Image (tube, rainbow, N blue to C red):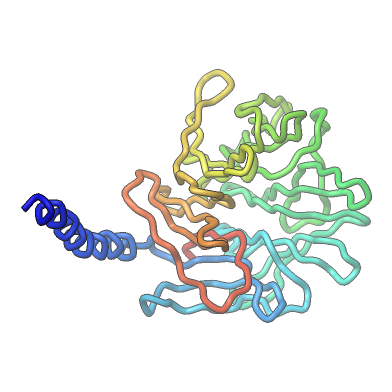
Length: 307
């Protein structure tokens, strides 16, 4: 009798799990996506180009190529003000330059500097300024600065004592910028007038800041400590450092966050089952959904846009 009782509990537990697990998986997969499409840089057949993914028809959706160039493109971002995609493109001489494309792949603008690379464009939602990073290929040193569309020319920010990198717009007069430090990378706040900087997050590898497409909150960044990385949300304070909280709960590694146009979600890359997947997650923690992109060897820099 005791033996029958011991076996009856696992049997009921298995039946309950068989019933509940599909329900849970179904809830994750049916999480509604925001209005719009996914913009990303993808490798297919050995070539990097820019693509759009439309969730219709469900569940696979439709992939459309924006560019079909011999030169690889990366770091795409949608500039709603001018209705174009800004990105980095590697030219035949090895340099990386900033490029602007319409959604049909027509080149609208380009910006290059002699004997240096330009990348990581972040256009202003309010005017014609474009934040970018210049790299010296000989030394690897990076310097943040700014371009102004449609003019040609890159103006580096006055040196702040350390190489700098990726940026995001907080307001027309303030940005987030990463700075190399003795313990990795610091996330800093910079005033556009005067150039004062203060450290917000120190220690570890704090990089890839992201803001809402219209500028400002929610403000996100990737924080890596050891072999684990996750996407964190910044909680501004009147003094430094700011507080922050984990909003993607990485099991291994989450990075390259982009805030959705409605400000309620984040699109990011997540290392799952041995490869990076594109994931949409609501910032209130109510669910997430993987976006299927079959046929690509690799996908980078995903963001959700409203063309």
